[in-house]
Length: 150
Image 1 (cartoon, rainbow, N blue to C red):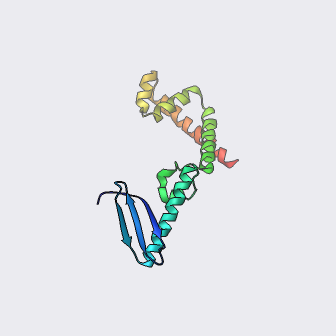
Image 2: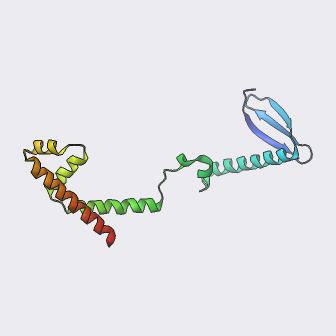
């Protein structure tokens, strides 16, 4: 049968152990089960009803990740947000100590340009650009690491 149950009800599960299922098509089916299975099915019905009520009130449990999986949340917590902000401010502060030329060259390098391409685009000597980037890296890393020593 390809129909899906839309509602199930346990009628006196400990005594009768009979469950009645109503399908979308309107068909009904009765199923007999042992007491252990009947108790399990009754508990499932209670949990399903509680979940439907929670959804209807637009409230969600923090335990929902256990049922819905990691895709239920975006993985961000107040702690990760704070760390992200802290790191971003650290990077901005370290980047602000560089000269405009160093900033431009480091950004070009980070975007995938080679040192030779940067030198060619600025009509500068390869050695000059190489030294500029090398000093900019050292300056940036020193400032970045000092930020965390505070």
